[in-house]
Image 1: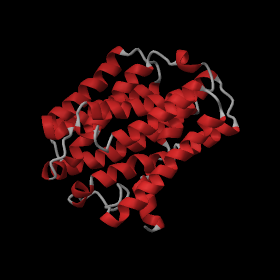
Image 2: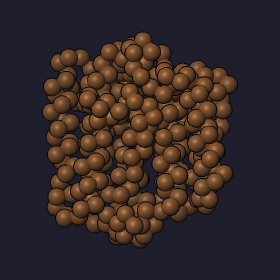
Image 3: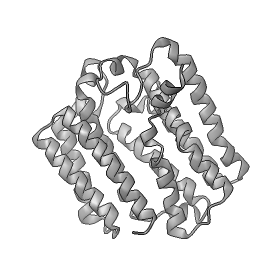
Image 4: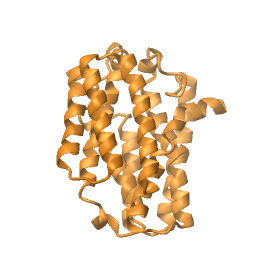
Length: 272
């Protein structure tokens, strides 16, 4: 398997999500960055992404062959000869992710790391294959974000420092994931892949995303303008897809949503 294919499998656009989530507790509690923290942040880029998406691609070979989005920034289309190399690299990534947790004897850090690795595997692989058990698919994605946040907290106040408003944001992650199922509706239907959209329909997926984002915006009491702007944007795009449930449009909007998350996340960390 060549280098470029390896990188495509890992979805480089996702490298920054884990570090942003990890760094939020450092911002909230003025935690000074240490070398071991920087190592753990680095392992949330390629290693975590390859583990998550590599296992996903192995078990979605049939669906990916029918998906016009695959082959570029949205991931490679694997062949049978790629399965063993992807499994080996995924296993190596999982082992590497344990190193900081083992060096720093912290129960919360070790537990969160273990659960992140478990969910990255269980999301796509049988027997659990949470990916095909909506809404557990969206909930498992939210839990991965939650445990990454706990990694950052483990260097400060621990789980007791988890902000109350953060639980609203976990539902926000679920809303984003539910929205994302719209763009793969047709290839998932053809390959008999079960998602929120294939079970409940594209418009209902958009409606659920709208309800979650609206609930956060109206009732969470979160004061961050960045979070509120993102929630309002999620409401807007959900209404657009409810009116016009086009998969191509949903894919384009999702890329914009991702870019907005990165920009607003960086502005949040910079306290702007």
